[in-house]
Length: 111
Image 1: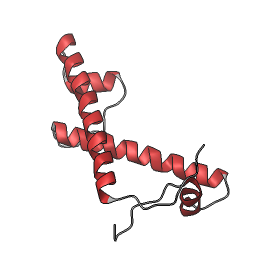
Image 2 (image 1 turned 90 degrees about the horizontal axis):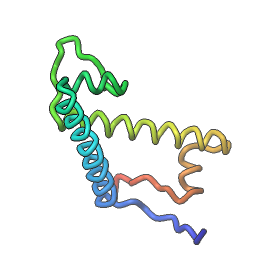
Image 3 (image 1 turned 135 degrees about the vertical axis):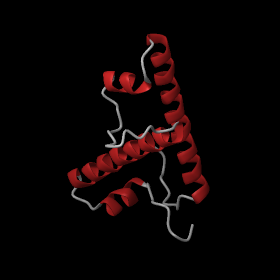
């Protein structure tokens, strides 16, 4: 493994990551849409079959593709944050210490 340099992550790099996550979420949504069409059932029914329904709304609000993408990206970000916190805990460090030790620096407000 090469030398890791501590560097700040730029807003552009974060934006690229967000774009990539949105594209991946859109791809997954299109797969679900195609499966629903092939089976002749609703997207919500397919999501329930795969136990990936993002939640229920008491008003049965239908989410559009962008809202589905947002929810999926948010769920993924939450999972990654939990994994990061767990790894830091296992190493006996704070999240910030762990990120600095691994060369994973959060984007600063001035970036």
